Length: 102
Image (cartoon, rainbow, N blue to C red; front, top):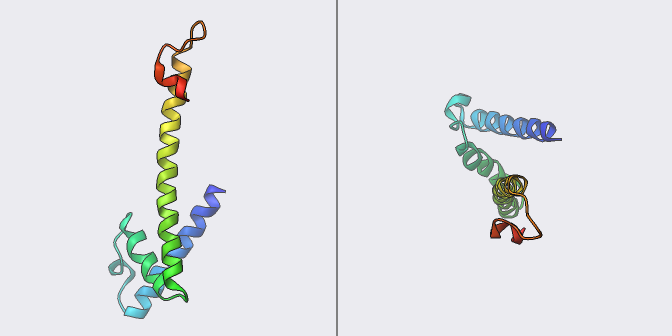
């Protein structure tokens, strides 16, 4: 599933860059920079050409926010699971108090 979503996102990005390059008459390499800045340049320009562009823009940036929160949640979860597996509880009492909150 992750591969399919990445492939679809790549197709959308490159078709958007191609459209922007064709409409402005410049090469694709000059349309937008590579990296995370691409999400803040290519997608907003593409969304501005769609009907109901404010709605799609809000939804797009909400998805970016949720993806960032999801990444942070998984990082914290992996640290907590590591702590629980590393430090076992003895006689019903946790050796480290922060483990009792999980």
